[in-house]
Amino acid sequence: MSPEKQFSKLLLQWNLDQNDRHMPWKGEKNPYFIWLSEIILQQTRVEQGLPYFLSFKQKYPTVKHLALAEEDEVMKLWQGLGYYSRARNLHETAKNVAFNMAGLFPDSFEGLIKLKGVGDYTAAAIASFAFGEKKAVVDGNVIRVLARVFGIDVAFDTTDGKKKFNALAQALIDENEPGAYNQAIMDFGAVVCSPQNPRCDVCPFQKFCTAYQQNRIENLPVRKAKIKILPRYFNYLVIKNKDEIFISKRTGDDIWKNLYELPMFETAQPLKKNIKTAVSTFLGNKDFEIAGYSEGFIQLLTHRKIHSQFIEIELQNFNSAAKIGQKIKLRDLNSFAFPKTIHLFLSQKFLL
Image (cartoon, rainbow, N blue to C red; front, top):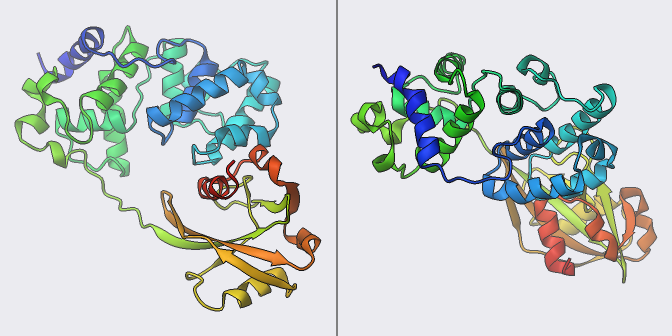
């Protein structure tokens, strides 16, 4: 029997006998909870995403509850999870499903893929888990398993590579248990065929795994693109009096859209000299003194390396900063969603 014909049978047997990866969404049939878990887990480790899933499930037990929430509330609950466009899309899709679809998710891959923020992988997961549709999921775990077992040398991040992996995944999916198969192959890639130190000693595919037989485990899968990471330099102003502070909301299509921050100006290079001149230009030549500086903070994003520093400002007229932000009580800082670096600074500075 060819490896292709054995693959599904061996995988499902492994799932029954050895897969002890327990997660609260496994076996779930409610498309809302499946969708919620899959959006949260996009570009996020399970260990990090799990508490967020539980929090969202508790606070918004139905898609209508989520749809009726204020965006700031949703962003606050998402705080720290990153890739905030997911949260905005999550909220927008919830409103679409709740108000335009009578609260019912589409019951097919073709319908699900039309929802904002839902890509091929997420649509396949919902379609197979909730509705039993024979549609294969293809994520990093699946790609790694298929590349190693079947010796696929084509780069998975190319057009040809995507076609090849999608076609093979669809050809292998079990006819009768597509949902169980999809969950099993994702789990297998996470706990056995892992990126580093895979557990080849317990792998049911060892006898015909190309990577194992040819000692190519570390070379598969193949990636073509190299991500160029560019630096950005953010200078935040801490403008406060005894019990109030100025913050502002990020708008436009830049990173962290609709999150809050301290008043900020960006520079092309680290701001080491002429700091007071730069701050004066941003503030509009208001009377101020620089009271101190923070240590530098670095946050690494997919395509950007954000260098942040926080400059404490004492304004002669505190209220004159109204044009660059909104004044809030220090005790209310925890009510707003901030990017990770700003939340870390505020937590250290004000013990949030």
